[in-house]
Amino acid sequence: MKEASDGGLDRAAQGRSGGGGYSDGPVWNAFGLTYAAYAVFRRRALQSMPVEWQQKLVDLINEMHEALPPEAVEGDFVVQIRKGNRFAKDELSDYRHTGAFRKQGG
Figure: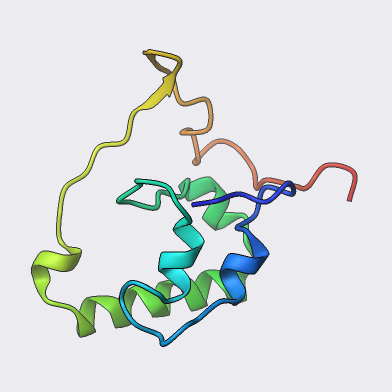
């Protein structure tokens, strides 16, 4: 997904909704011109969101599971961090023993 200078999704991409179809809706636009097939979020980042946002996300994920066929939402995926051409240790994977992310200077 395209990132804005503040690290969030491109705001213009979030606002476009076209006809709401598969290839012109907000998710399509948020991915921009990337070839990414997945959106991956760190658990620690999700747990750092306000509780209300966390609940909205969980509710939407549950709705997605109810609305789509199993092959659309099932799978066992592994994510590996790369730096350059090498796999690297994910410094943020220890979600159990670290606190929430806090925005610097804000």
